[in-house]
Amino acid sequence: MAVFVFLMLLVAGGCFYVAYRVKQKAHEISLQMGTNAPAYTGKKDPCLLSSSEVSAILREPVQAAEPRGDSACEYQYGSGGSHRLDVEFNWKGGVMAMKLAHGMQSISGANSFTTVPNIGDEAYIAPGGSGLMMRKGDVMVNIDLRASGVSVDAGEKIAAKIGDRLQ
Image 1: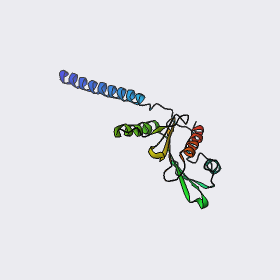
Image 2: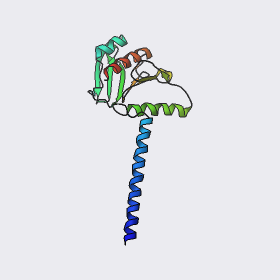
Image 3: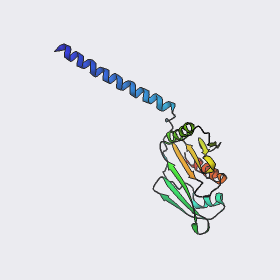
């Protein structure tokens, strides 16, 4: 009986040791991937920029800035609000999302994202100027330029203003 109890304790100890090593390795990998970025603690308002601020950048009237939950803002601009600019936020997990986007790029073998300096912690223009991805801390922002018809230059200015507001 004593041998059986000893073997059970040995197995239980081995399980705890394996669990400890797995947790330690997961922590190492998360540090390597940069997931230790500080969490965003500010107000999660997807319409960080006012209609007038976006209007000044676009040089067109912006009729409305409509939040869609806490993860997206739709700016309606142009004559009668006929155009839409979508700005989407990932309030947490932005580091991982950006790394995954670049991982998909390297899998495809194409270097199709263009780095944009001095915006947030990192920013990129998507292929063909179809969008802009910006990360500040652990927040990732996607600006859809393709569907909105907004220029890359205007997208960069919007992303820079948002990046400045994310503290």
